[in-house]
Length: 475
Ligand code: FAD
View 1 (spheres, helix red, strand yellow):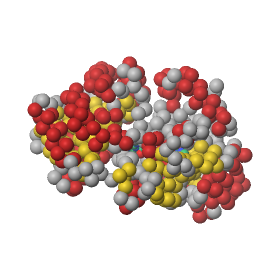
View 2 (cartoon, rainbow, N blue to C red; view 1 turned 180 degrees about the vertical axis):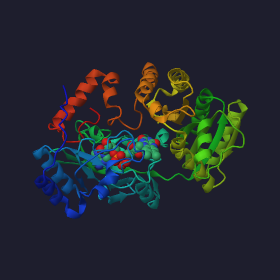
View 3 (cartoon, rainbow, N blue to C red; view 1 turned 180 degrees about the horizontal axis):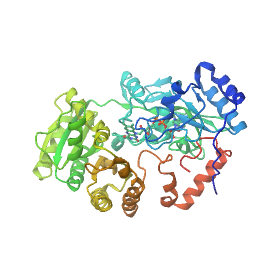
View 4 (cartoon, rainbow, N blue to C red; view 1 turned 30 degrees about the horizontal axis):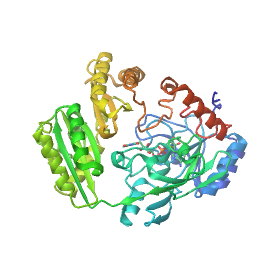
């Protein structure tokens, strides 16, 4: 089963006017200056082009856009907050961009069912805030939460720093409203936990990166707000010690261990050098650090985190540690974590890998990936950090000091091949969180089970026979 990629989109003035009439002239952007923010992303890695950006204000308008697009075989690119890291939200081929930014209503909050029904364009931080206002928690949390949208989070099946306890975006959804390529609306905004009435179609659209349909709204799960939260930085010697500390933490904290992030000394160095007035969390230097958080429904988070760190020190794993003394220090710890990736920029080119391996294999992965990378480019600076508790490592590699950035970045695919070979050997995934988009599309056939890939293509052809939904992405 093959997917036929359409030729570059060409939009006649008449067709452009028909699309514009659906949303109204004010929300049909053709001016290049106004359209520019929708065509590139913050790292500038992908630059798209498009004659038209549509900003629908309702599900009915999205449906009308999709219906016309299928009728006229016009390719569309759904876009939320434009924070995706694999080029999925960029119109590479002159497609019409359909932005969800005006679909920004919280439709309902039900504190008895612990659910919240929101439109796709609601910014993640706003959804979190609305849950907090209702004395609840919406736990999805990631560095881009001030800009990314619920529709984008679901379409990429985002992970983030609380996935350890609450799961990834997929785990936080009960129901979806989806506009199909032909304009039909799947009304699936159920808040039922139990509903075994056939195939689970909802899950098809989560992580589909806009290639199967347009998510317009979702019913999300909320959780009780934790009573006590404590955050600590611990200095350790190796990723293997971090794994032992993870084991200790799980045994002591069980479900109240909500984050467990691995950070190398080089990341602290870069952040202190380039971050906005951020200080190192501990006085001395350590090869590695763990940033952990305990969120408890009772008043015992402090006791729990102290018990973990004490046990870690007694076992000779934790060399030094600090528990955030107040909310400001806690925010500073997380700020440090958030700016790790941007702090790489002033150090020159960075070749990135968003991979996962079985949690127990993380130390072996890091050892072998470092060896492979340094063999390929001597002097390259591995910069591995991320969600150790999920086996998800952002294995970024900064260029050697003084190297030519363009020449270094030209080795992107060679390095990907070397690192992904280690991932494959350890039974991991080449895309843990960020998706496939265009960045990893051509690699997918080499790593995905061929039968699974064939089923994916069949589903795509069934739901979107003219390939108008985000063509050229994923498949
Ligand atoms: P966009 O970037 O606009 O789109 C992403 C994809 O979803 C595209 O393929 C697009 O076509 C599709 N899409 C968007 N909206 C819809 C819709 N309504 N219906 C159908 N398809 C749609 N990701 C993580 O998982 N974990 C992290 O910890 C994390 N940290 C990040 C930190 C930073 C600083 C940045 C810049 C990014 C980070 N990301 C992370 C990646 C990114 O934020 C997520 O992928 C996010 O979920 C994308 O949401 P968005 O609204 O920006 O989507």
